[in-house]
Image 1 (cartoon, each protein chain N blue to C red):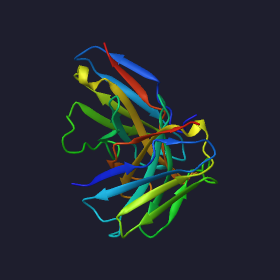
Image 2: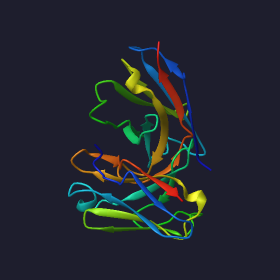
Image 3: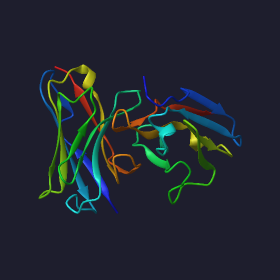
Length: 111
Length: 120
């Protein structure tokens, strides 16, 4: 059971907007630690998508956005494209574990 | 451009020790300021943080693996290593090495990952 909880799957049609939630607690996101997001395409290493809750690294399209509120964080993907079909993971630091942790991952299907 | 590359046996027998090395190019692990991490992913599953080492030698291991894991640095070869002893089939996974700026920050560089299978 992951410390950060993500829905196992989400789906959307091309062009639509989807959001992926990452529910934490008072020892991680709720304690003020940042959330980060990664995209993992099949057979490849994860790639940084969002850091520091809402910042995009260079090269990441602005269709991807992140936010944080209370003990949760969210990743939004607008204008869905077929190449967005991948697994998405959130990450944050947990003070009770003294370690960074990942969410369980969410599989995005573009219908 | 920073690059990380894992290397090591792809097949390990049960009860033996899994040993992997992550060679870093484009950055010096001696220069300080970064944490060097090992993360694994069981087949079809999510990501699991194994632990990290700071350039000073300070380490952290996830509690569930702490009794079996050692992460070390070799500054002369600019690489860091993972040893996991007494392996079982449950340790079969893709193992990634990665770099973070701190123990709580994001991963900015990943290795490509290497599959290690535990089987007799």
